[in-house]
Length: 102
Image (cartoon, rainbow, N blue to C red; front, top):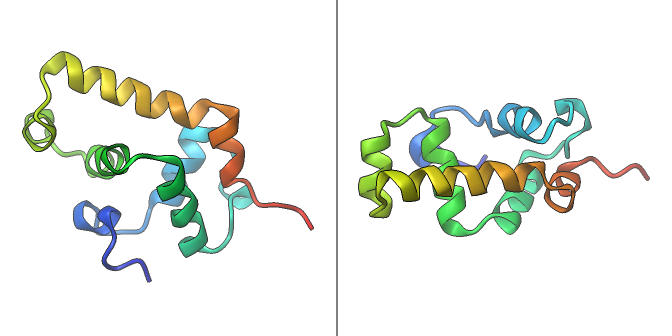
């Protein structure tokens, strides 16, 4: 499942659930259960660049590789990361990942 995704290009494991839980401050048991659906929400809430940055940064790639991939300066990379992780803390993004009680 999710073998040909941007996430899997840079990460061996589908560990984005744990990272989302960490960044959104939502327990992983309260996140959407289906991995495919959760990844779909992640793709919908982030731009392609942000998703790629999240995947690459989560894979602990060197900042030099990130700057090269995105043609960023040090300041632009810092700003892009700040914007990305700030987005995870916003309620309109955060709550989208939450499991809906029926």
